[in-house]
Amino acid sequence: MAIAVLAITGGVVIPIGIAFAKRIARGGSGAAVEREVLAMREELDQLRAEVEGVHGRLAQVDEIQDRLDFAERLLAQVKERGALPPGAR
Image (cartoon, one colour):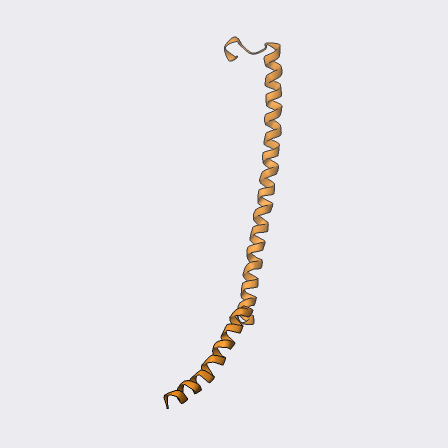
């Protein structure tokens, strides 16, 4: 009797387990995959926006670097001519 119950249960439970394993391996249901793809697209859009922001900041840093270089050249010219007051050297 116990062997018959195990055989019947195994005959039902094993195929159900295999079906679940295949579904998990495929990535779940179509709706779950759709939600995950949508979430990934939203995250990608956010990352793109952040990258654009970083590019804007890099342009600002480049401009600041150019201004700093210009100021350093001006100060070097003034120092070479001796136009700075005696205490400023």
